[in-house]
Length: 107
Image 1 (tube, rainbow, N blue to C red):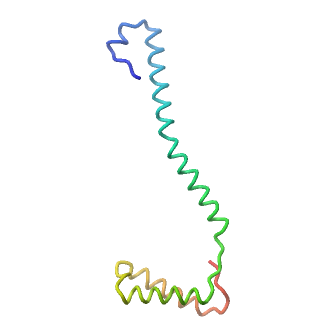
Image 2: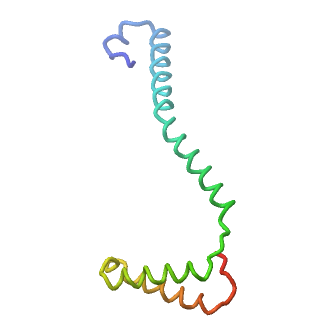
Image 3: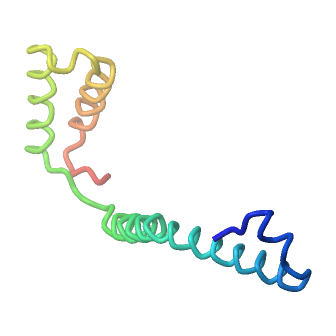
């Protein structure tokens, strides 16, 4: 806890230095304590990213593409994807291009 100027004036110079050092130590300890939740979330995020990078290869079968394509068409027809119309249309175009290949597609 920081000392008031009035209290510091009554102390000897050595005691004043020690009091300031103690206040700085408490301040640093509090800041470190407040950083712990941030460090925990960063650690969890980095672990999730590591696992995601290890398992990033997956195969989409032909039937999956048809299902995604139908869902996008229905979403556009029913108006659910109006805000993301450009994205949905680009995805449909990409799916239609990918469907031309007979082998399973790896992403």
